[in-house]
Length: 252
Ligand SMILES: NC(=O)c1ccc[n+]([C@@H]2O[C@H](COP(=O)([O-])OP(=O)(O)OC[C@H]3O[C@@H](n4cnc5c(N)ncnc54)[C@H](OP(=O)(O)O)[C@@H]3O)[C@@H](O)[C@H]2O)c1
Image (cartoon, rainbow, N blue to C red):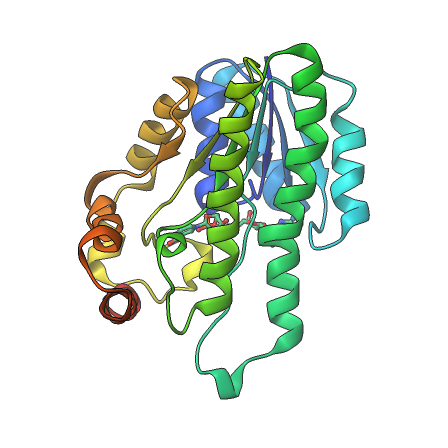
């Protein structure tokens, strides 16, 4: 069994790699930071006796995303986890368009591209699973993180739509999507508050992987579910305000 994980040099991706290694999967771990990938490879191979390939790529570039796909063609890919991502936001008058475009290339374009590339092979083999990492912010507009949240909404809707299509064509392939709330990983840049730090990333990713392997379509765990309820019971204008306040609570 072979799994490809993007953004595995830290945070969620690193934990997903550990969870799959524990279950005996050989891995291809991908990110820009080769040294971190090498350290993880060493740790995983020593602890879990699995084989780990490393692929260094900048997924904001389509040619790198394609190179990753071509590299992993040497094996039958059972699992793809589109996890790599970055976040930028803040005051609109301070926004940096280049940064935002880079973010959207990784968070949206690379996710779409890799999903499509691997999905074609999975459909042909009638087997395989894809997990796309979205965000709690995908459920509603999130002021001061607008482009990030909109990109993550794309990932959520795309994944849910695809999974429906796969069921309709009676394929065994499944696409899942996870919408995590705030965790104090690299993306948070040390800005997380105590409450966020108390959540165990290890426990969370273990639960996510369990649900993913069982084929759950939308994975939204624990207290994070409270936010999604907002969309049914709260007017959109109020919900936006609550999203903003909960974002501020997460980073202050
Ligand atoms: N932390 C949270 O609160 C939170 C909440 C909801 C969703 N998420 C999502 O979770 C995913 C993982 O983020 P994280 O929280 O684990 O943050 P993280 O610790 O910063 O990890 C991000 C990963 O993405 C990789 N990455 C970033 N830009 C890349 C690029 N251009 N090409 C290839 N790889 C790239 C990074 O590796 P290199 O720097 O080595 O390239 C790193 O491995 C992201 O999609 C994020 O949006 C996070």
